[in-house]
Amino acid sequence: MQKQGFLERQDLQRLLKENISVIGDDLFFLSEEFSPWEDSNCRIDLLAMDRGGSLVVIELKRTEDGGHMELQAVRYAAMVSALSFKQAVTEYARILNIETINAEENMLKFLDMVAPPENFGKTVRIILVSPNFSPELTTAVLWLNDKGLDIHCIRIRPYQLEDRTLLEIDQIIPLREAEEYTVHIREKQGEARQTAESNKDYSHYDLRVNGQTYAKLAKRNLILQVVKSAAEAGLSLETLTQIIERRRIIVVDGNISGIEFDEAAKRERENWGLAFRPDRFFMRDEDHIHVGGKTVALSNQWARTDLHLIDEIISAVPTAKISYKRAEESD
Image (cartoon, rainbow, N blue to C red; front, side, top):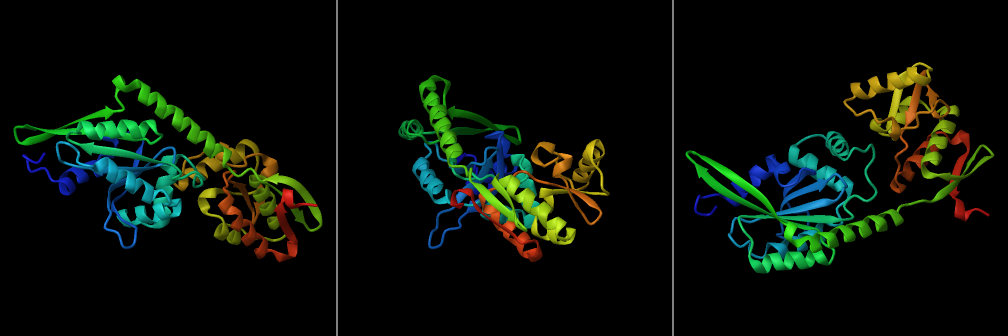
């Protein structure tokens, strides 16, 4: 690369940014030269996410041995591990110069979700890209992977063909010959997934609406019942859509149900340029919300961080006398 005048940022970084799938078909480009830290000159060459919601630090070198890029990338991975989904959306919107709402839609569409994943960024993967890697570097990477990290080494070599430059791209770590290491990686990743599952919020809540109690509701059912009760108490569709993002509700004209609603809901999502995932919404007739001459289906995908939406809805209709608390706090 150096002999051919191949530049790291202007050539290699630009090419991979525009064709990121060549180093991983599950990657979504988020940013380049990413440096959100104060008083630091550290810059991540490329930042991406994968379909599981993990962040991916991509470090590039055009040297023949890779230098000390594995150490640099580990440091960057530690620094970026605190990045929230909201911050990632803001950065992606800035890089592409698009509206934040459009950036979030693009990211959620890639993740195949209607709401941000609770485990976003909980794990950080590393991809090292270089023309070659020294034995010291590959030994370090294999050892780090054995200790639970997820580091891939991608070898990228340019070849001149007349007036064109062709790139040969090979993944050299994990190697087939290093099967025992990849087994360790899978085991560690499985443990990490189990830990993430155990850390999910399974809290239940007691809800009171005008003197009536709904005991031990799961979070999704709590939000559904609050919205239904608020609508019955006079919550307007305009207020509802101001509090809850449009992508998390389906609104169709008329008081309809069954197949008729399903078909109208599909058309509504397509009109908004959104995927129709009925499994991600409360689609049963008894769960529909009727307000302002419309039939509304609410998302069933909610995180603990969404509880503030309940408070906003309750504040919008104080006459409904709605309150809730965690079930374990009940007398």
